[in-house]
Image (cartoon, rainbow, N blue to C red; front, top):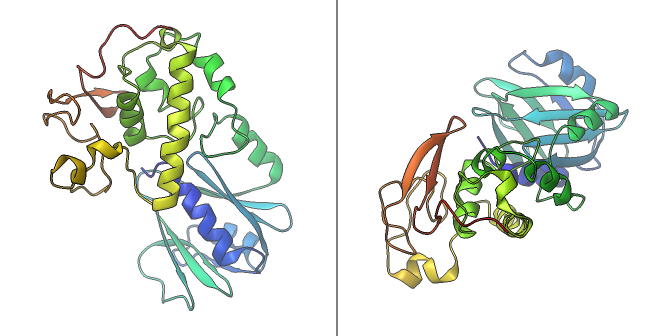
Length: 274
């Protein structure tokens, strides 16, 4: 499933291609024909993201809400749109370019009131200027739920997924099994600040790179990582391989239905209060 930085990049691309333009909307697949009719011929007035939710605003109080889920993808481009191929749920066509949406978990048209209801149930997004990490902290500080689960709870923190979860906990030396109430404010503030930096870099580059300069392939004389997700990471999908910092084998387990990765030396299971 795409992580939050990808959705913010999609919002920016919608603004670039369609912002201020009247667009054509259709559903070549047919499954979103009624929704497409509500958007067809309207002007795109804004495009935004909150966590993993894309929100494209149109005149007349219409908002396209998309959640890609596991299988959703976007194809976008400048110029004349090609003939649609495959199961295109929604096609937008404007003066500057086009966008094809396939296989989303959610594709619907909301009004502004419904968007507020959606936003109110989402947690703070590290990529949003209006994010309030204090709201997340109040939930984290009173729960026995472990931080490895909390970081994937989109009602607590909106945007991070499995990669950012594993990597930010490693970078901050926090064991994923630490309970929220034992985490401590300073640890939480460090995690939040690190997410802000890491995810902003993901928006800028389009990939997830989390290793510090001294641990890059060039600095360490090691081969670059080869993975579908791209980017240089410390522990994600590195089970059994030596930790880039201490050399101990990276471990993995299933937590909250997702594969978790951590280093037992760099992320000890005790000593995280404060």
